[in-house]
Image 1 (cartoon, one colour):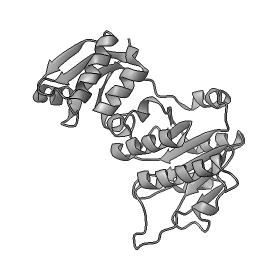
Image 2 (tube, helix red, strand yellow; image 1 turned 180 degrees about the vertical axis):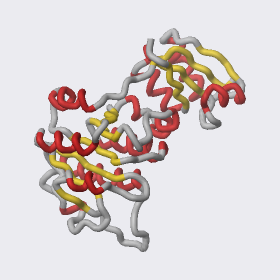
Image 3 (cartoon, helix red, strand yellow; image 1 turned 135 degrees about the vertical axis):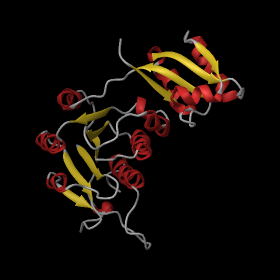
Length: 250
């Protein structure tokens, strides 16, 4: 049996109950909360024959909710994170031109969760991160992602530069976000097989990552701030790509 994980938060747990209830071993709910949203989750769990137990707020905190559980916490079968060995088969199985998000060292779980949420909304096929110096699928990531961690595959690769080189050899164009780039986001062609590459908090893209991109783009800034949070920049870039991909002539 796989090692269990703890998933908390209304949206994250609901996504599990609706999409993969078989992964859930146990559901714990706050004994003092009786509102409609929580009762809907309990009904879904009971319909799927998932054990449901009432717990106090302190007990839920101790089970792993860290005060952010919103009154519900689930123990689930661990979902394996894919690696670079699975990438060729994954790409070959796509019906549409690949649309990938590559995050170079995002370490804040709130940022990764928000990026996953934007990736799901924009129709991204997979998110790729380096295994080291990058946050994984933590309970906080899953909660912030609001269910997107269950729908968007996450691939953690050992060598990001080598993976980028392999993507380019597979015919995927890679464009990285960099504030000093001479080309703007809205002038960059983002259709066809595509990987958008964004850097982590603070330093942005690493030198070797930049060197493996086909081009760099900057997000136009009209105010006085010099840069955007990585999750905000990711959302802007992904939805410009989506706009171009569904309306390429505009």
